[in-house]
Length: 410
Ligand SMILES: *Cc1c(COP(=O)(O)O)cnc(C)c1O
Image (tube, rainbow, N blue to C red):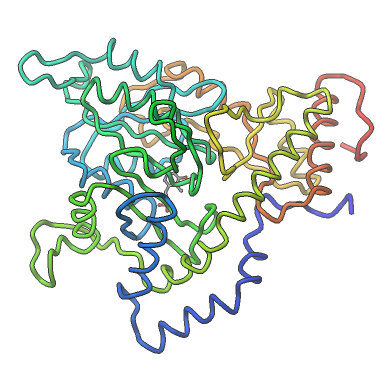
């Protein structure tokens, strides 16, 4: 038992369990040759929109498409500055650039690793100025208008949206949620005195159905959710070559559709999403207890009382991370780092002029964060071994007495 490997993620079991249902989707598509569009797509859009609590949901080809189409449809123009965090997957900033805009960064909160409202406010006050005649906010270094902010609900934990929306309102910015890791995550709006789902709080939001996400396709997929009918209409055009009807191209668009087979598969899996998320939350509670009962209260992630995260990732923080990583791999315990190199220090953004030290909270986190195994089927025994091993390795690194847990040789 102790030497069995513990995967970081198990994508096989849920698909085996749903095999008959998923095969049926494929058979249905073969019978009708309805591969693009059609009733499976329409039903999934309706059901996922309902799940998120939005009037509209538009299936697209990927999460990257979803962020890009959401930005364009909401009215971000080429040359605009769009603000996000350096601690996210590069798809967030790729989508901003592909919309013709310029990504710019503000640092994250030290405990949630999400967009820090204080930093956003400081950025807008210190690095930007308001044009006296238009009232628009200009980024002084870039000489361009700031028109949108993209909060990323990273690891499945909602951003403090009340505060972000307050600031965005004051400075006239659009709010476009990157909910690609947060299907079903909930946020308690103190302002509206109501629980809201990720994807229903900004002007528009983007989801990814990449296989490893909490709701994943058997391939690529994404969706845009919004209460704004006009934005939804534009996204429908953008995903399909700018057509308002067949061969009437009102604008130039993209090939960015969600195919019918993936939509059918997502529909079948959506039935289980709430339960899978609940099991992830239970696994997070067990991790919390295991770490808490040991002398390591510093390890578990911080969960503000105003949110119910869905633990797409379970991220702990350890200064000895790099030494730990190697030993855990040798012991066949799957881990990950999300993300090891902050975006502003990536080669892709080398010409932009950022340097180490520009976003200290993100940079420090990047050297210490460690994602532990997290998936709905994770067992209590597996978690006990993960935590026991982590605590043992950390104690060893710190030259402390090793707690009585699974032994191994280094
Ligand atoms: C996965 C992800 C994306 C991109 O989704 P794809 O479907 O892979 O294009 C965007 N943003 C974040 C935060 C993600 O985790």
